[in-house]
Length: 356
Ligand code: F6P
Image (tube, rainbow, N blue to C red; front, top):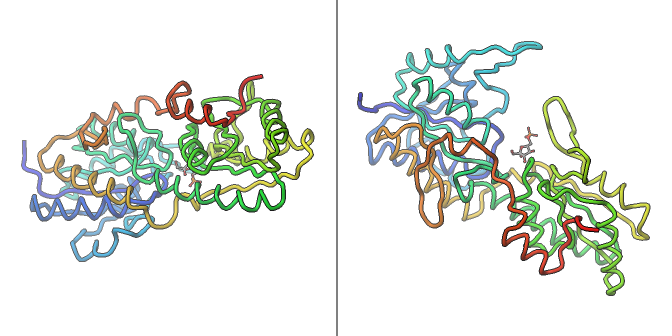
């Protein structure tokens, strides 16, 4: 096997706090420990179609550790296997492979979520030396205990729950907070539990409006005059469907308004809705994510230098390990509805809007 000399790094899909920390750690390790040359590929796989690259030097990455977003910019529209051209899609993967060879890139570190990792796996199967780093605020990737970015999103969402508590209490209101997470309820469950929400609605446990109303009434009968409901954007009622802002691009959103509407007529309290949106993805990563991103970046650079391709770095317990990329993209990691976290919430009196 030819020795790896020049590597590329790209960030794909939605941005996420900690991307810059991965880039910094990977560049430092690659240049200092392995004497590799590093090219930053801009705008994810799109940058490989346009041959849009910048040399990533230690000067360029100085000071980026605490910064949100990604120095390399990103897009969730640049899938080379289904590249949008007008109303149809083209397979431009052959062009990507040709350009990788022409750029003299011996291996690529792809930092991304489910979509990016699926592209990375397909290119790996076509002979491109790939290493993957799992990123997403949704924490929905199998094969790793946590993705970086998730804890920052939980921190932001928990802060929102705290802030809604004081205003809910002052006005005797029901506050419905919609958080991100796609079809997994991790952000809702973690922030709901950490913020002391009364009702948590997650995609894994379809809800019944009657059960939510019953839970609010039961709290009222115990003397409470306000309620906090945290709802994951992918939640749905029993027998119902997810709510989309845009069904074609599968952008979820609006379930909090639906829940408010469904329960509003039955309870004698005012209801207000907050949709937290991209605030959960922006800004500086919290220390947990900076650390995880740094460990992932270092481990990814080691793997690529040693030619151990087709692997994704992952957190298992306290350890950073390498797992096949294909293991991470086979199935989303859903909340275990019989697991300890959901059980703890239930023991504390949290309703998941089920039952009855
Ligand atoms: O996957 C991350 C995520 O923020 C999801 O939680 C959310 O559904 C989606 O991306 C939003 O995507 P966009 O930035 O394209 O609106």
